[in-house]
Image (cartoon, rainbow, N blue to C red; front, side, top):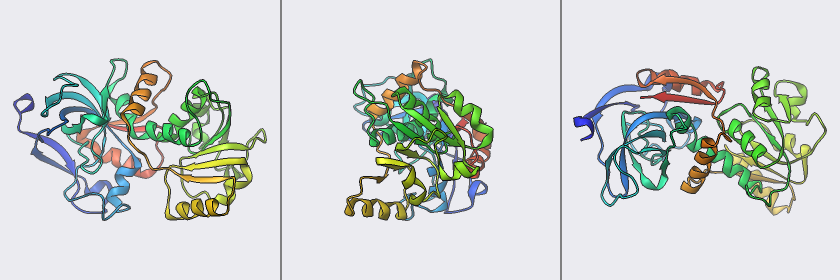
Length: 330
């Protein structure tokens, strides 16, 4: 087995609820890769809100599939072992991508990964930068595509609003929108205004001000699309700020979002609410990694934590106050 070891350190929880305090440090067998899988010696993993939402029980009874469960899917690591019929990689290759979401496994020293969701990590990207990309940057990319951006020469400048633009998904969405040539209005807390400006925002709203709460563009622009990266904003707040055929792309859709989306369709409204569920794609992952390699997509790392203190990273994510990404290093 990898490095002559047969066991590894990992983080698990055994039931729903409990937050960071329910994470347990365990020693477990190193898994073996099956067909079209590789075993990774992990270097870094990034935590996303969906990880602790699964622990809270928001996706029960579907996730996790069983207890105990080792959470987190976004990883960067080195290929330690090849499964049967794997020819795309060799031992020692550096890769980045997503683990099988149902199986998790990212908060550990080793993890089995499907080759279909892995891409080569260039030396220009550190493990924390690379591990930050998969879920957050891919969600941002797919949200902008859902809003009509093609990321090619046919894109025309639009007015885009990005809520929670200093967060994990938001800070990537802001950069991608500017890369596509859009005018971006961004919301964030007062402490992150200068950061959001430095990432390219044309206008910034402090969400705690009256104007910010109403999402009013400082220049009076109507939004052709909203990349909605936070929660608890009603359709009635968005609607007066949208252009005639404006869309709100909601990356954390609730049942209420789904109902409103359907109502917009059946009433033939030109303004639309679009629920977005991430669909992991290797071509999207490669596009993002190439952009990051070329310096066109920057990762803001809120904090890094060793695996021995993974519960600190978990608690930070649950607080909802991270700027950029939270990373665990192995």
